[in-house]
Amino acid sequence: MALRPLRRSAVAAALIAALGLTGCAGAETTPGTGDGDDTSTSDELGGELTILAAASLTGAFDELAGQFEAQHPDLDVRPISYDGSSVLAAQLIGGAPADVFASADEINMTKVTDAALADDASIFATNTLQIAVAPDNPLGIQSLADLTDPELTVVVCAPEVPCGNASRTLLNAADVTLTPASEEQNVTAVLAKVKSGEVDAGLVYRTDVSAAAGAVTGVPIDGAEQATNAYPLVALNDATNPDAAEAFITFVLSDTGQQVLADFGFGAS
Image (cartoon, rainbow, N blue to C red; front, side, top):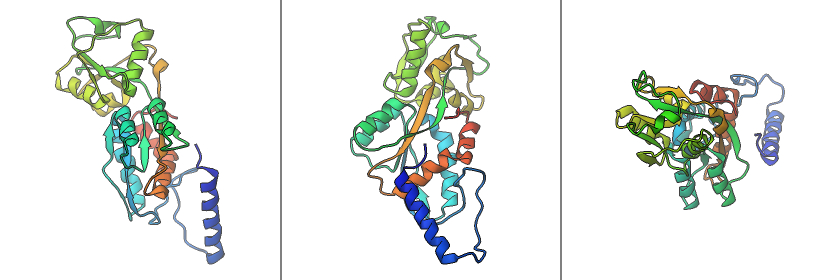
């Protein structure tokens, strides 16, 4: 989604003023990295940027924040707060300060916008679920139906968490009734239990399987696209650094930002 018209007008006015001062005397410019990008190195942004993001975005947003901060030397991107989207939405509604919120689903973003904390959320990525199992799948798990084996220990995300809602959608579509050993508040906790061998299987995003780098194996789920999660992000209305918030969102939506997300296994928005 493009920036709001008022923001575009302000940027255009600033650019025109700058051109009026410099004229046509061969002013030096720093090229971006591709068509449609806003990724040129600049020190125009300063202060701090506070981001709250869904747990499944950990690797990708750490990389995005690092690149964005490198382009703006006077800006300090604070350590990103990662958790389940429902947990983060509740924190924001409860008064937690932030400049940017990135959710793993539109349901929890709607909670924030309905509370008049933000407007104009932009979809920037998609994701689907897989069954995470031990490396090389020693138990031969091949489908959601296999998870009903009473000999297996399985964990999922809680229903209010995006990965939990998607899990429930897929289980219902497959007419599978599952009794999980636990329902976790974020997908990172599900993945951790599978990686440690504490459980036999868990429903996680395909990006989490990829990020595990061989510590788990991902079993594709038939019809996983029926529960595709769309990821929105937004600048909060009471952001203390609104210019940096808008610029970060523009960067995530740029060709460079989208490539980073693709490298981490996310689908296009």
